[in-house]
Image 1 (tube, rainbow, N blue to C red):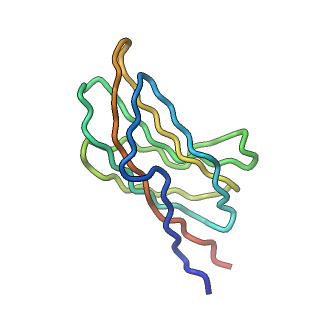
Image 2 (spheres, helix red, strand yellow):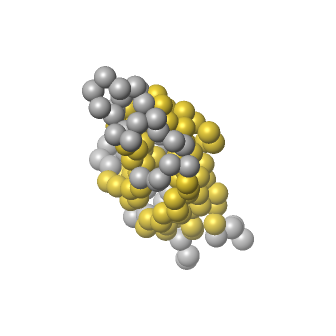
Image 3 (cartoon, rainbow, N blue to C red):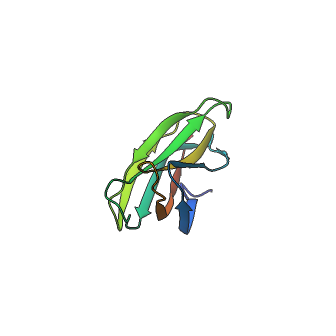
Length: 120
């Protein structure tokens, strides 16, 4: 019997992103056999209160058209727990670091979680 809950690493501990209005997306992961996802997102401090961080899990049937399953903006140095229902074949993680013109933000973060299998 396969386990009901399967751990997943979306963004490894501790990954650093740098650059103004930086967007990062992981490769697509097949999730057809899963009904939902639980995600834990953590981020470090940002030097400027005007900078922003948005994390999302997106899903797709064709790896071309993506919709958001989970969207989160965790507070500094805290982990945020989120859930989403999966209805499509693929997921990917997305992170956006926003900043004012001329700024160069640096962000350290991670996102891990669990995929929950569909019950037959």
